[in-house]
Amino acid sequence: MPEQHLGPVGYLILEFPGGQIGAGGFAALVERVDRGSLYLIDLEFFRKNADGTLSTVVPHDLGSIDGLDLAEFDGAVTGLLDEDDIATVSGAVTSGSLACVVIYEELGMRSVLEAFAADGAAVIAEGPVAIDDLEAALDSLDA
Image 1 (tube, rainbow, N blue to C red):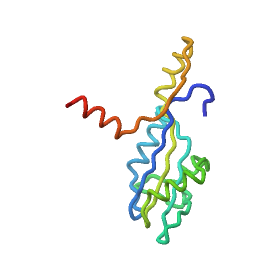
Image 2 (cartoon, one colour; image 1 turned 30 degrees about the vertical axis):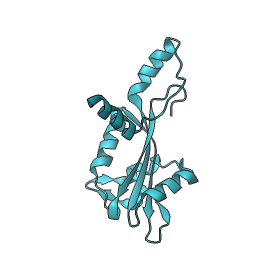
Image 3 (cartoon, one colour; image 1 turned 120 degrees about the vertical axis):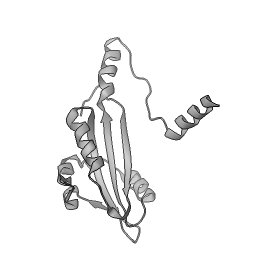
Image 4 (cartoon, rainbow, N blue to C red; image 1 turned 90 degrees about the vertical axis):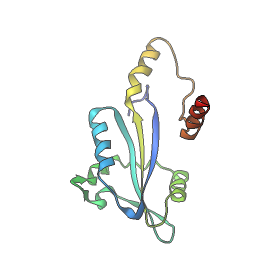
């Protein structure tokens, strides 16, 4: 992972009710990584058991889905998530479901950040924009 100029870093927690995974989203993820527009920092699977406990699932244990071998993601499992992160996943996922946490860097902004740095600028704050806040702001503009 680059050390100096990171693009925006984000995460997704995906839930697959009943543990039913489709290949489309994972194929699109691989395509963005292969194209160089996204860097996959971490990808971890969890199963929420009937008793409410969360267990880790190794990608290769999920097999192939529509020709996509999830073992491709074995190398993306870094164990980056801490106890608080796992508690968040556990609280968000329903029993009997499979969850996937994806941590990624958007590489499209890296060249912009490098150009600003070359001009002497420094990033002094950064962070995500909550979708609900963005939608509310856009709705207020429409009013």
